[in-house]
Structure formats: structure tokens, C-alpha cells
Amino acid sequence: MRVILTGGITGGHIYPALAIADQFKEIDRDAEFLYLGSDEGMERYIVPKYGYDLKYIDSRWFDRSSPLKLAKTLFKNERGKRQAINVMKQFKPDLVVSTGSFVSVPVVLAAKALKIPVYIHEQNAYPGVANKLLSKYARRVFLGFEAARKYFPGEKVVYTGNPVRNEFGEQNRDLARSELGIAQDDFVVLIFGGSLGAETINDIGLAIINKYGDDRNVTILFGTGKDYYEHVNNRLKVGGKEVPANVRLMPYISEMAKMLSASNVIICRSGALSTAEVTMAGRAAIFIPSPNVTGDHQYYNAKAVADNGGAVLITEDGDVELRVLNALKALRTDGALLEEMEQGSYKSAPVDAAKIICEEIISDVKAGRR
Image (cartoon, rainbow, N blue to C red):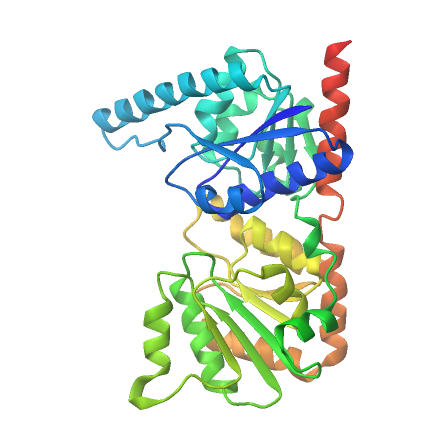
């Protein structure tokens, strides 16, 4: 089987595509893959790291702010479509798997032109523009959240959850702590705001360090995002201070599966990828949804986990730092509550998402060949 993957710019689109590819390889060791992405996105770093071939095509986000900018979008995506058609004629894929973002538009349109089956995965409770637009060309639309069903043609929809790489469900807390050099009896808090970072999450992280910095029984793992690292580091060193010994400050978390596993509580946004990875690890979370996303989808992502008892949902308004500190204190002092939340978190996990997607695709492709 030969598969083209597309979807990019952010890890939230890229990692689900790679999880699907990994699952395909488990089913068919001879499967071949080619990732079509943008040279402006995170795929240029992530995809080669995981051993998949990557080619760039032209694409542009939908900019309707002026006729000129819209024309530029249409022109660039049409050029990308032609590039994708040429790639597909050489690679000869059996199917295309798209996980969204504007880079997927020319790829899916190229597949349509060549009559290659298209399968889409939508990660969020409120779908992105590209997936809603392209769903008319898809054989199946797989959903990360049941709430997105109403936005797509009903006969195509399959609810699966968000596919996550196997490593997130295969970690062991004691082993992870040993490998990371963290004391087995520490209370470990992991804070992150994504690869670029989030100012609110970083302010919360600083408040937690102010409260628990130098606490011998606490380890704080803090991913600031590359755009905020120097700023956060400088704030911690105001007045000639040093970063507390129990704090690990990082611009980017490269060992996310291991750090999630080592932690007791995760504090982060509730993008589709973060919620899927946290729940696959079975860790209690304090989610602070970003209010600056389409359809408030991060709120609904977080609510789905909170409704299962796996997370505390705290909105970004008013005294958000104080509310997070209070929630963290409750979890640190109540072991039974923490254990219940871990169970609720794993209950929300998309354990078989990638397997369901791949089996559904293989069955559909075989049916189409009869």
C-alpha cells in the first residue's frame, strides 16, 4: 500500500497523521509513505525526525481580507495542486490521508482530480475551515470528538478519537522518572503552552514556581515555548536570583511522552493533540482552554475530559492563576482524588483511534477495488 499524508503547520495536525502512518506500518510492513507539507510549518522539523519522506508544495491560508489577497491564495493553492498532481503521478498512491490545515487543500484537490480516495481526520470538536471544505471529496471523515459530527455529511462520519503515537500509552511512571532523574516520591507538575508557548500558561507557571520553587518534594517541568524562553528565564532571575533547583526550564519539550508519564499533574491548553496525549498517558490535568480559537473548540475538548472526571477545566479570565493554584493544592493534598482523576483521564483516552482509522480505510479501499 502506498499512502500520501498531508496536514501541517502545527503539531496538532502533524502528529495524528504520523500516528496513523505508524499504525499502517504495523498492519502492512511493506507500506510506503510520502508526506506533502509546507516549508513554513513544523512538519519540516517533525516529519523527517520520525523517518518519513517529506516533499513541499505551495499552499496559502484563506485570506479574504481583500480581493488581492484572496486572489493570491487561490493562485498559490492552484500551483500547489499542480505540484501535488505531478508528485502523485510519480508516487502512485493508493490513497490520501489528510489531517487538515491549509496545506491539505491543494493535496486533496489533486487527489480528487486523479480520482484517488481521500480520508480526512478532524481533531477538534469544532472543525477547521479546510476539513469542512474538503469533506465533500472524502470517502470517510474520522472525528476526534463526537461533537464535530454535525458539521460533516452524516453517511461519511466515523467517530474514532484522536490518534496518538503508541509511545504515549506504553510509558511507565517509575521508569520515566528514573530515566529523567526525578525522585520517585516527588510530586511532579508538568506545565507547557505548546511549541511556541502561551503567555497565560507561562504566567501560571511562574506563579507555581513562586509557590513551590525550592520545595524538596516537588519537581516542576516547565516548557515555555521557544518564543518565551528568554523572557521567562529572565523573570525568574530578577534580582540576581537563580532558577530554583527543582525547576527544569525548557523552550521545547522533546520527550513529551516520557515527561507526561513521569508527572502527577499536567497544566496546559486543551488543543486536540494535548488532550489526546494527556489522556493516553492517563494523567490528571488542569486545562486552561485558549479563548482565541475558532468555535471555542478548546473549551469543548477540555469539557469532554472534565465530564469524565479526568481534568479540572479553568477558563482564562479573572484570577486564573489563583484558581489554578487552588486546584493544584487540592490535587497535591488528596491522593484519592488524584487517583480518581487519573482513571477518568484514561477513560477519555482514544486508545484504539489509529487502529480503527486504518482498519476502516483498508476495508473501504478493498471494497472499492471489487
